[in-house]
Length: 113
Length: 111
Image (cartoon, rainbow over all chains, first blue to last red; front, top):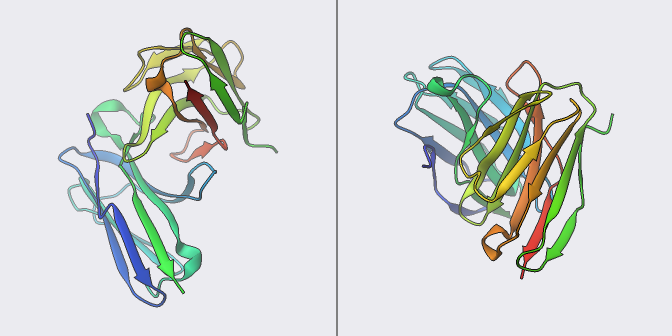
């Protein structure tokens, strides 16, 4: 059973636009991660959030963990072609300990120059 | 450090054949994982290990077996391959924090 739902599934935008990707669940997570995956490669971790309401910034990327630790968002400001890729959220359900991960279905982003 | 390596990178099997995928990590991580990635499904956990000599089932374990005889290696076996096992397989390892490190993947096609 997939516990993490990502939206949108696909996103095609022009360079310079802003976008937000959402990751939602009815379950509570002890941690939530965001990964970016390039074609032919494994996912690479962008950020981990562990505290409800936590906000982390990584250059033009802003990540937020929901107050109830059931959802998260990734906001990209002034997207660039280099941001193109598959974005995955993953979490450790609180009932499963801190080492068993559930992944979202992914958001495929394409930024056009 | 090589990080996480996987062999082979590509493989084509006929239905009923068997094979073993090898994952190796050089970070002295306790936790290791095998996932499969299918279009529109994200990554799904097949099996995982919390330490040498231990393994546990994940979300989609049927048709697969694993072994962790050495801390640095995690093997995934397909005893009798089926077309439904056509997928990209990723291995990952994790230390004491939350970060998982992924290998480059193995693309398996079962005809």
